[in-house]
Image (cartoon, rainbow over all chains, first blue to last red; front, side, top):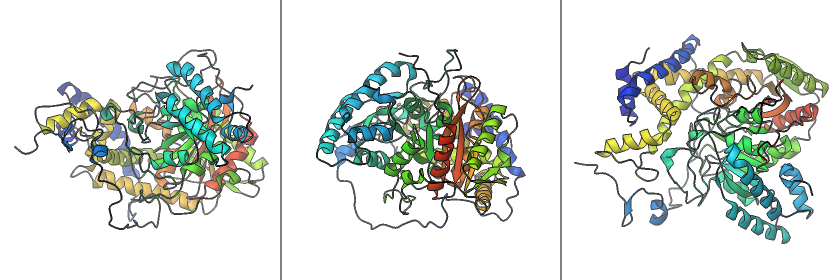
Amino acid sequence: MSIDEKTVRKVAKLARLALPEDRVKPMADELNGIMAWIEQLNEVDVEGVEPMTSAVEGLSLPMREDIVTAGDDPQKVLKNAPKSEDGFFVVPKVVE
Amino acid sequence: MTDLTTLTLAAALDGMEKKQFSSLEITNAFIDAIDKANPHLNAYVVTTPELARERAKASDARRAQGKAGALEGAPLGIKDLFCTEGVRTTACSGVLGEFTPTYESTVSGNLFRDGAVMLGKLNMDEFAMGSSNETSHFGPVVSPWRRGNEDTKLTPGGSSGGSASAVSADLCLGATATDTGGSIRQPAAFTGTVGIKPTYGRCSRWGIVAFASSLDQAGPIAKTVEDSAILLQSMAGHDPKDSTSLTNALPDFRAATKRSIKGMRIGVPEEYRVDGMPPEIEALWQQGIEWVKAAGATIVPISLKHTKYALPAYYIVAPAEASSNLARYDGMRYGARVAGKDLNSTYENTRASGFGKEVQRRILIGTYVLSAGYYDAYYLRAQKVRQRIAQDFRDAFEKVDAILTPATPSAAFGLGEKSGDPVAMYLNDIFTVTANLAGLPALALPAATDANGLPLGLQVIGKALDEESVFAVSAELERAANFRAKAAKWWL
């Protein structure tokens, strides 16, 4: 499966990465180089193998009490905001 | 008086306990050493001398009151991937701008709970994606090591290159690091230091900037096997704030370094004999085999037959998880926002200008392999191959107690020598990445130097939760190797 320029543009869009037009072709080449190397995974017989989704076996996700453990400190939450006002984040218009 | 910066952590703790010097004295010695070396090595991206002196004084006061913790007064470096309260943390990415956490990561918090003093934040590959520290937003770290008399700048490895360079150059007693595919062990091997990645889940990931969550694990880089055991003891432990944090009790890691390995069965995997491996690495491995035999262990040939598929599987799993984890950097709540004509273009500009080249490449791979129509062919298949790799280890550990391999396929290379070819760079992690995929503990330690005088490392891999065997075998190898080489301080 070769990655064409159209796919690179689509994937960049999905990933919300602005990709200048002159970077599209080189990026396609780079990705194809890496994906060609990855193709060797097709040699592995994975018939009947359960996909590994956790590094540690037999762990079930622990549940905790549904209680507030942190919060109620808007100053802290906003401390690193690029833009804030009156205790809120200021962001570009989301709904037209 | 001896140069305090050259002490091991164990010796420094002992010296402070015996009142030979104070935490403030050794902290000041490190601050001076960093001032002189850092313009040349670029190991620290933030130094916090005032904070360090303040904490050292507080530490000396605690010790005077008989309230010394396990790391009381020990000056350490913290990798920039760990959130540190009130101290800039950027994962060495431009996208985080001047992000200053209002909270402390569990692991760094554990170290400070035990009395450690922070000297500053250590350089690393951006978001821990790299094997040479060249992807850092703040420029590459330079290794204190040089090839013979050449002045070519060498990589300390990556992604924990700042940690490795700083420990190796005596700019801290030890450092935190993280390992997703080899980022503790490869830099340790390149710089003649010791690094251990514990079993997945031993160290809490809370407050560590996420790269690939099913693989990321914190651990120390230190000067000796014993020092790495002391540091891991403080760093590890259950944390309810990380749902994958293990609840198992922590064994006494330091005690394990004194254990005999007589009667242990050590596996040697034939698949790690890769094409093009330098004869020096092969000879080092053979030497390691002889050392453990001499200590009374038995060598057992084993097969880990899916080894060659580990890196390609990793380069599906890790970018997939990274593309998801890094979706949060949108310039809305924190970081450097780059405005566009609307919301979407603000996202796109922020991310394109904030993320470096390698990070963007991995986000695109991850997004591609997770996108509709490709998920089964790539991500699901990689997860199945990962299971095969883990199964190889489970089978091997029926017959052996630990596995001995080289840590890296070569000694450290020059900055810029491999940065043009992503796949050549990825191959650095060929011996280390399997332990991440299988979640196993693994330690790299220096065992010899090559013809140019550069360090070469061995790796010991253990069963899940059996760091003790890893420490026992590693300590035995350390005694046998008696590695004494040290980089010359050419910056003085």
